[in-house]
Every structure is written in structure tokens, then in C-alpha cells.
Image (tube, rainbow over all chains, first blue to last red; front, side, top):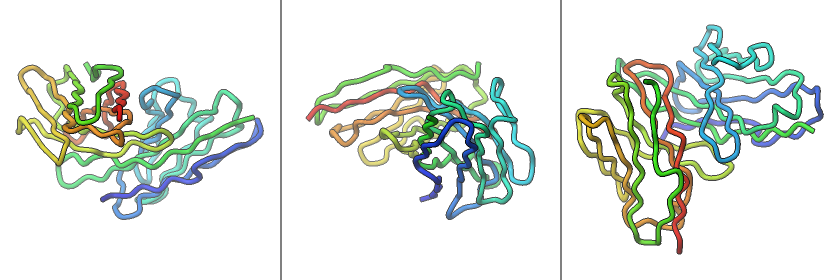
Length: 118
Length: 112
């Protein structure tokens, strides 16, 4: 099955630090990648959608200058949390999706990154 | 109209029992309905998916039932096992739509 690798799985850092999270599709070309944030015992909250080679589309209320997304290739997207503060602590999950003709294809998720800002 | 409603919020089932999770939607343009399983500290994993041209899809112990007229679909887990204890999310997508709309999730606990 399709595999999405997300790295790192856990980050603990000081307030003010910028943190980069990588998301790679290992065995398929991901035309679209998604970044989610998930709070404990809650559903997935979509932060942004990125298509390879173009600017990410951010959901309402998500600061694009705070959460920088780059989708430089069909297999790699990165999320950088700039000048992170304790309120940015959360579980961040990426997913990747390809398209086959006109049919929808499922999203495949990475294993998430637990970000803890001290 | 973009919402997907999911119930129950939590579910406790005895080992060997049937777990049933229901979802409902409003947008008739949705044409792809996946279910995801998420264990604590992990990302969601695709479990099974259905398109509206069929009313049922079965994969092992997992079955999706789809009622197009009622705009409802459900996940049935037969012979539930403690290892099935996880959070389950239903989702829906429009044709060529980029994103999925996710339900709020159901926490399933299967007692040994």
C-alpha cells in the first residue's frame, strides 16, 4: 500500500525556535499534500493544502506566515512552524494524495509529529 | 452542507460483538467515502472505502453499508477484537475534490 513518511515523530524545543517537519510519499507521486493539526481526542483540523510547485492554500484562521509550507516536488512537502510558542504545541499530521484519471484516490497519512514547545 | 456527521462519539463493545458506526452527509456531490482508523500517537490509516454506485463493500471483518437515498453510510466491524480499539473517522470527497471532509470521530473500545 501507499506509504507516507513523516519526520520527525517527536520534537521538543524552546519557545522561539523554528521547527521543520517533512512529509514524503515513498511509493507514489503526491500531486496534493495536506497538513492537519489534531488536538487530543478531537478530529483532524485541516491547516493547508499544497500542490506541487504552487503556493499552499491555507484554511481560514491559519497564519501563513506562522506555518510555512513548501511542496517542492511530487514526493516532498515541508511544514515549518516559525518562532514556535507553547500554544503551537500539538500533533501535526501530513497526508498525501495522487490522482488517477478522474477518479478520487484516498489520502494516505503520515504517522504524525508530536510538537512540544517549552 | 460540507459537514459529515458521525455517531456515536464513543462506543464500547464486548469482544466478538459487532461495532457499528454511522455517518451522514448533506452534499449530494460527494462520491467517495473512506473510513480511517487511528491508533493513539499514530496517523490515520485507510481502512475501507466505498463509492455511491454500490450499496455495500466488505473487506474481511469490515463492511461499509451505503444508503444513497438517505445520504448515510456506516461501518460494521464483525467479531470485534480488542486490537480494533481505536478512533474511527468517516470522510467524504467530491469528484476531483482536493480535500476530504472528515467526521468528528468515534472512539471504539473493545473489551476483552
